[in-house]
Image 1: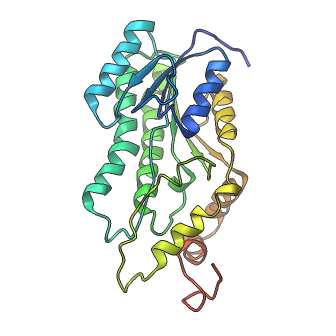
Image 2 (image 1 turned 90 degrees about the vertical axis):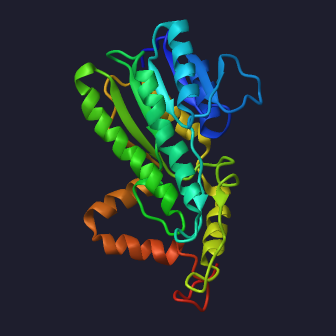
Length: 275
């Protein structure tokens, strides 16, 4: 890997979770890291307070970075959050809210940063394995990340001639506070019973089996040195296998699998399976 210590790297949501670990690794590698986040609990240097849902704050942060360094080499759109609940019952304003952060935040940051990017620059958008596989009671999160994935692929085609590369990174489950901080809606009706709560508890109980955020950070650093970014990168062996299987098998097989294991069914219900 050829390292360039003058690279200016902008990371959104860089003060916690994957973003924090990634920012630390890039800084250690000699890059100039610009932190965009809502708060700065650890008092990191080169911090820009930014709510990615506020276009004026996004523009101000990118303009300040552009004025200070004259360029942006790498943008990592990492800011985002999760939401679970019965799609029928999730308040519409909360559906708008998750898209405002997870999708429109990526769009706003990309638009503002591209003004300071030239040939060789890169945009790496953190989507999710949930962008590739449907999950009951997490439909809005899946949809927002699917939108990020498609935005990345489409913008990649638009920017190809300019030499700016864009890719989508789809990690599997990562061991951070993301799960604990997920917005949960447990409103239900007879149609769904206790399935939303059971499904959420099963997901939450697997936190100790998730990937360490350093796995994602190291992959992002390796990607950043590539001359040509892959269009899409899946992180996590089982998710790569599921993605491959999904290409071979009918969609009904994947839906059946998701329903049985992620649908919140308990013993004595549709699927006779213990929690």
